[in-house]
Image (cartoon, rainbow, N blue to C red; front, side):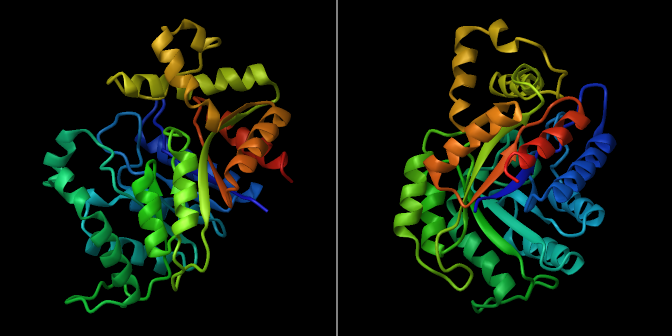
Length: 326
């Protein structure tokens, strides 16, 4: 049976602020927990007026405190932005606060504009080259399996579930080599999905943490009572995506009926390219689209992404989506 999880960027809405965005993320996590989702992940982004999840561990701590059973974690931490020791301490502390509930998804891309590297005092391009070594060092800081000159406290002995995230073939190869679960960002970069999953499953080496391959695939999902309503709600995320790819990101805007029809051909094609990993519509429409995607990918888990301006509509989307698979 396929599990369902939630990916949240902690969006900041037009006319609203950071305080409201973090509070809304907590309420969304509570809805996800009540509806039966397995995980609630927050993604690391920096210097975006429309995203409040930059201090990822802090936001995860808030979500952990307002929930009680759902797994919470990062989807993900962009490891080139950091050093393994500090991340081990942060997630070791989270594991102490919320035992048995903490996930740590790790990405290689810095996920930020070049100026962020200057602000972080990091050469992000060079740091990305050391991603495999940093992943192994971070894992050893939790497990103690390598002879390291320093001990992370908190960190050592923490039962953090580590994942490799990816949108290309590199992450699939690394996850297979290290015997780690693998999550593919098909919700915004589906081009290499099938080949990445093939490589991961074909080359997987069992590890102490994982005996066999475990795949999570991301989908953009928006569910409402009717197809038309869901398509309108989804236009908030579509506007944000177009703005981001156009180099003009901002806060999450209100939905616009018929938004795609207002776009130039190039922007329409860009959004259409994401439709292979998208389910937008009534419960029946969403159920059918997710079912086709599961049949195609054989994913062990589906993580649903996608925001809309009204937090209540996003909450209802999570409920309706899960009800369709109950």
